[in-house]
Image 1 (cartoon, helix red, strand yellow):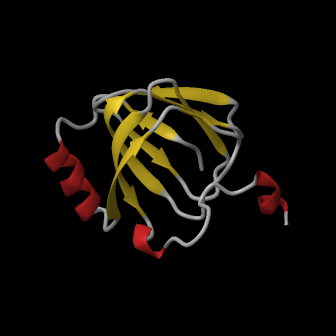
Image 2: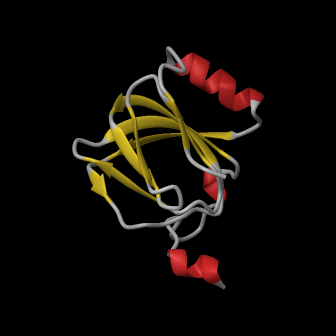
Length: 116
């Protein structure tokens, strides 16, 4: 599995929410501050709809950095090691494979944990 970016995928919030509902995902709105994080992974998959700002996301296994701006959908499969960068931050609607309210503790997990 790999991270994919679909530029110009959606036009507005309503379309993003409709797609999340059709995919049976849990919606969550996030305003992400400027970020430059370390390599990490998540136990859940997500479809990220970029509303504002720009996200640079590196798929570590593919050694490829993808850029997503407003209107793009970013698909991040569970257990894929990646890194996120954004100098100005970004605003998204995320469709998540788990209910965000059920998440307890850190969601950015150390790649060393995948080796076990």
